[in-house]
Length: 249
Image 1 (cartoon, helix red, strand yellow):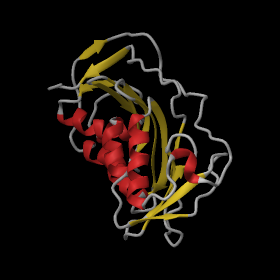
Image 2: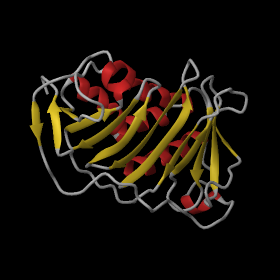
Image 3: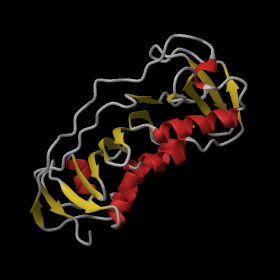
Image 4: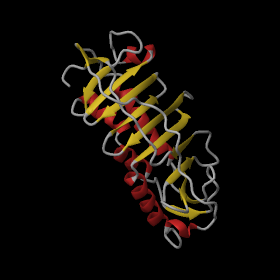
């Protein structure tokens, strides 16, 4: 399951081949991208009955987890893993359902910061990332595009929680319910993906059936993981005060 997340982060690498640039513009709005201090929690218990998971098949538990994930008003997703060449790959994004998302993504070729508000997508990066965008601007320069442009459409693969869910909840093989474990104080049920790209998804066993953690198979050399926290926490979104508009947006 963890490897299913990698193609989402790798979208950034494809974007770096397209090139960006454009005319200067500016904008302002209330609010700002900021971390949330709240997190998901549930009473400690090993029974899955609290979230209605008792006696369900692996596929049924997976479907419940997907429904809880996509139905949450907000969630914080953090992925840390390694790319094909051993480079650090990951993202740290907060999603607000029906509003947008904000966070950072690193596909192993530089860090990109994203703010999505409705159909508008703003992005910036370090010098390495902007150079791959072929953007003739200093590090930290913001660019604006829309979800309808080629660049924006690819970036929404990273900022649309429903598209992320399509990756998370698409196992590579049969899914089997296994013993869960405590995840940050919350009891869980484990879902083992028995396919070649498998791993274990841990789903809250009390309250909402939120997915909380994905870990790769024990035998893999990949030491990464994906964590899902701060369900229902505040996510404040604001566009940058100054940005350049990507042509064709």
